[in-house]
Length: 196
Length: 300
View 1: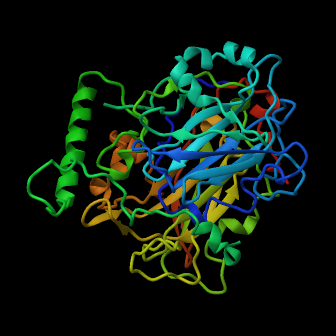
View 2: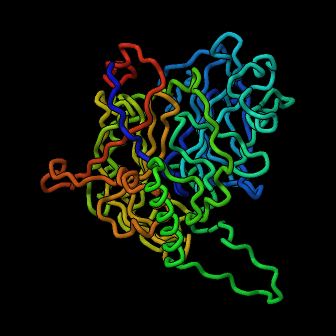
View 3: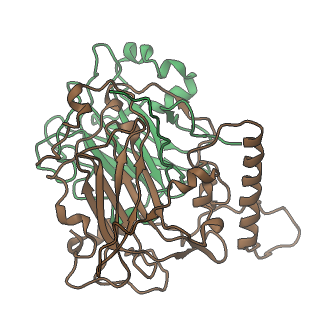
């Protein structure tokens, strides 16, 4: 396949305030039925640069199944109740909290650190942000992870979830300031993060 | 779909542009004069800020800087962005396995009728009927086949069907303003809808958004995920709008503006607008089947 012709990507724009009647859908945050075997809760709070919770953000997750397989099955929008598609979407509530029901992702390669890919959208956020949330357990794999090992320890922490007593995961997102979440640039060019 | 829109769900998100949470541009000085009314920001103030940023960008270009292609995350004229942009540079990462694939959507997920926003109720919506069509391509020019496109928009009078939209313009009982479709084998999408109106917001006094349709797109890799807005050609509000102007490069801005296409216009029925969308380039080595567009169930 020749790919000599490079096209310039279309710019993103903020999701705005009025996605609430368009993007959410029935069972959008339930990759598995809550309470079903192997299901866990992934939850957290989205904060702005003043430490206030953001009530109008919406998150998407995309992850492998528990065995580390990348799933290629349709049915994320109209869930049939038993097919794991790997995709979920959760608008935060009034208190800035999002919730997913999912499975612990498996490592996609032997010895790799397991993580969930995340896209963050919000009113006031000009373009979507990508990040990752890693499972906290396999420290050896985390230590070898190319992304995590390229970060200083304080920043690295922002990408690793906390394991709750009930087996769930808690992971907060800070768009700005103290403890600012590491957001990713897959292009190597183009997107200006900080800006000044 | 629209008749059973779940009000509890779509009204669950609280704040909107109408309840401005923007911090003041300049913190209140510790002055002896109490209870001074906050200074009201006008369009002139905002236009001057936007112009200063644009001028600085033009100088940088002249000095050899690479053209910008995306909005600035830190764009102060959009007040709500002040506390919502990362202050650290985005961290370069090579996408790994899961990120090199995308969720799969298909005709199980989206009914064919969801691409016509004018037939979702018992009557015809008010306004100018339009067709919006185009192709979704990746950065290498390959069609993005069998993928999900979602849109949402205000009605013809500039009102969103959202509890928190307090713009005193009429709701249209025959228009919800939400559509979806799955791209064809050639990456094509097509919606029938109503031309949205401009609407006022509270970023500053007399702030109006140019008419736009929100688009949400998936590529064949999660790194290509994008949410954006499509605008209509010749809108007089472009120079005044901090959201459109957050893209400082004119060529890049132009990529969000549809083209009127008389060949797409249907006699006695609807005006046609064409808008192609380009996602970022692929980072995966494609199999031959994928390169031929065999992925997904778009052939159902």
